[in-house]
Amino acid sequence: ELDFIFVAPTDLSADLGVHGQIRHPSVIQKVEEAGEKIRQAGISAGMLALTPQDYSYWRDRGYNVMSTVAMNMFVDGAQAMMKSIVKYELQGMKRLKQMALKVIASQLTKEETGFLGETFSSIDLNKDGV
Image (tube, rainbow, N blue to C red; front, top):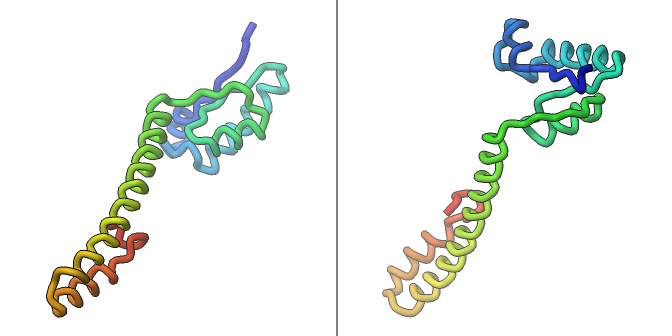
């Protein structure tokens, strides 16, 4: 007795001549057809979910056994961590810019203050990533 049948999209993509393209329309179509036949036989269908979007897509189509790759979870976690770090550091850069402008205004010559003030004022922290 089978508990579930797992559809392997990477293997299927190779068989269809689009190796590695697990979201290629021909692969999606075959995976959907296979899932339908598996469920009609009264067996649970399994599928690969590399992203939250994959998960919801296949769950919406009746797949109820999902597999993922640990590397994807680690990469997604690392990307979220780096995004938080960059956001934090950019906040520090904004504060540094504000403090530098105060220092410039009080200790430099009028010419130096104007030059540095224009330079710092022209930096767009959102656009330049500084």
